[in-house]
Amino acid sequence: MRNEENRESLFTDLEPKNTKRYLYSKLGGLTLKNLKFFLMITDIGFILYWSITLFHLIPENSLFKDYNNPILVAWNFSFLPLDLLISFTGILSLLWYQKGKENWKIIALMSLIMTFCSGLQAIVFWIIRLDFDLTWWIPNLFLLVYPMFFIPLIISNKTVKSLNR
Image (cartoon, rainbow, N blue to C red; front, side, top):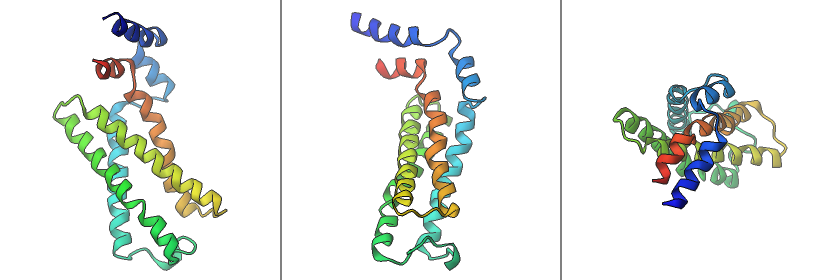
């Protein structure tokens, strides 16, 4: 019991009295309601991207450098399971949120962390190759950056307390 009290007071002491207002002001007004929009954009975007890729519908002039190189084809397709898992967890978290299941936060957090990792891996690859094509950088920077605005909202004092029970 004492250990649980210490853990709870640790998080309580670190946060201002009005956590919701504090997070809202620090994150430029982003709320968990905004998360739904970003998850849907990402999840639908991945499903569309992989459908377009599997059916070879990307125009030749929009393909990344060395697109037909077997190693790069393998590299690109190595993201398929991760990206589809991101879409699955993002959509599942939204469905659970609508049904009032508290565990939606854990699934959304998993989706955001995997999204961040997907974007990071792609950006690092383009940096190593010294390939700076904005067509590929912009979507991957989106995947890298947007989760960082929502992860703190999910890992708030109340969420941490509910996960520690």
